[in-house]
Image (cartoon, rainbow, N blue to C red; front, side, top):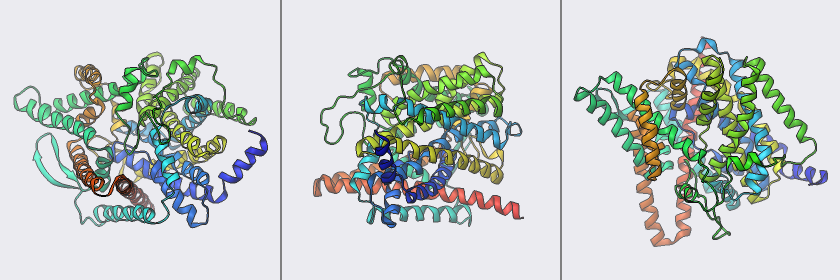
Length: 586
């Protein structure tokens, strides 16, 4: 594209109003993402939420361009995955009691280092993984469909913000006024945290994930709580403390295997059975669509791109603006300097991080493109274990390594989905990437600020399996750094998970149920039951009024669930900041 064309693209798609709205939204979405990731042990994609919000707010100031709305939502959502990378790794430092060894500027260095590497990787691989590949990117495709529908101005916007207000008010009544207990239906079962969370956010997660996945999640929860813990202790196989170590190790093995195995598989090529199976299993939380066909393109075959294909090709920057290549070099150099001087990592470890960030970003792009799932913390864990095997890095430095890679991979997955959205609706890729730079760098700062606020408000003891913030992924990373409680159970999880994967059973969901406290799984299961009831209503609506009415119902359900999730998490962050401010003033 010519320089004149580039300027026209910037003027038409990156406006002052879009930047301001996007940055404000980025602060809110990033802050809520930190809270959600720590509290829920999961981070649903915010893309549909930000797409609707961007349309509503831009229309309120007289802006109607879909491409401008896309860039605005890109700025809004970019910090979310940066927040996920930090929340899924760094709290492990506090879980191991190493909090005194990490400072705020080291946390910021981790966030910035991972952000810079993630941005560089996406610029390098965009053409090959978006333009030249038929990877579906279900999240990006769903966002494009939302923008093209252009129905967010009236009733949809009111539903979204109304559900946010309801969830936020519920959070205030429960956590500030204390009128609602955190857990209801509690039963005193030794070793099992039986109860239902009074959390609209947790219920919405179950609703968005859906029935089959949560069914396996509940199978794992029942197995861990009543099979291993209660049953094993009752027959005298082990005590409750030993049972909890077995449960956590088994759950980690199941979760680790189900993500790593398909990503390293070299059979994921066009038309292969492994790829077709991956496509048929669907997407991540909140995703709509799966690998296969898109509206207007019937019969298009699933195609993919392996890590080897990308690394063995001559990869050149796909964003051809002359000034971009020096900027990419500057980003890489800055990330390397951050690793060496701010985090005190050796040159060899720094080189490994830079190289492996590119490799894992490719893996992230492929995973998100196929399924809508971005296992960022697992990529961080893989590189952490690799670095630990050949270096003398401290435990805290290993967390830094995992955090950088997780942030880079989380951002890569988000950017590649946004590139897919841009490809469908015609957004200029350079302008989109610039929007990602703005949102990601701002998000890195906000994510660290929120993390520090939560620590100041609740203390470092608030992070852990039975604490205020479950931080499930960070628990896994911490366990790998400190030592697995039960190696036989962990190995059993790896082997058993492999067999389950080959049988088409989602071992990841099974492992999540094994690992998380029972009350979290039970509450998620209640949300999934609500989804089952919702689907029955939808089916009846189809029979009576046709598919068009059912589509409206689907949209309303997704909007309400997304609004509830966003509302409670945003108010939760506000409460944390208010607690910090009160402490400073008192």
